[in-house]
Image 1 (cartoon, rainbow, N blue to C red):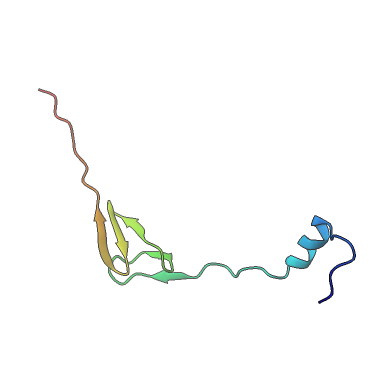
Image 2 (cartoon, rainbow, N blue to C red):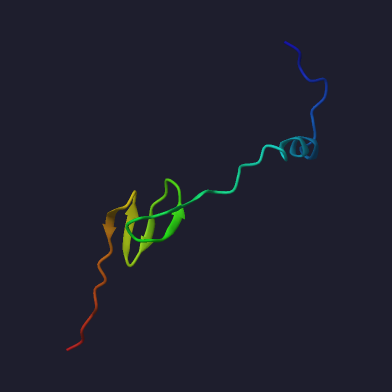
Length: 67
């Protein structure tokens, strides 16, 4: 198997890789909350963490009352 004769510089390597870009992230509309979010990601809405339209974590906010 042939091997490169000389090492390619970082700039030549990076110039070649400029065409291999990822597309912009796709946004999805949630039917439960009505918010837009990234695909396959959980997102916060009103102190609740949603994933696939279901509540995964509910953040309890405690208020300290001084007597």
